[in-house]
Length: 172
Image 1 (cartoon, helix red, strand yellow):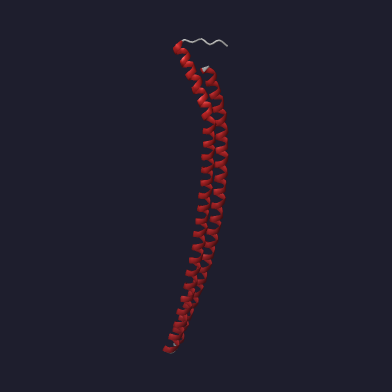
Image 2: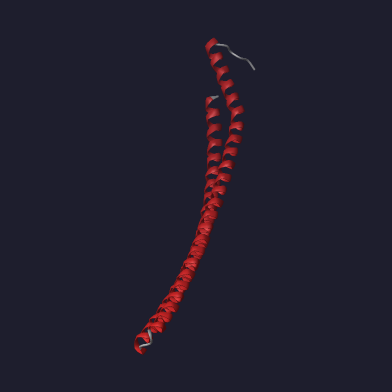
């Protein structure tokens, strides 16, 4: 009787283990593929932000070069003090506008990237929570299915022990 129970338990366990392993590997592969896709999207967005930042840097450099040219013109022409102050004020205003625009743009893009990363992390957390909940429910179902079998096995073992203790012979 013990041999029969052992064979039955081994057969069921091996098949269940194989099925569970393949299901777990498939789920993990799908999860990793979705993570890779999300990370690729985030990297694409970061590259876009980097390109826009480079464009802004070029614009700032252009404004700086124009400002330097105006300064050189002022020095070369020997204009009056008022003309120089007016041109310097104009240059200062242009530089302040360029820097404000660049800072505003960088802040907006950084906020976008932060929010996208945050959304991706929340989405991934929700997916993992769902997977864990499903696995917990599957585990509970398996435990419920194993309980009656375990009770039957326990009863058979107890009957066998009682029979052996009292040396009772059953005739069928």
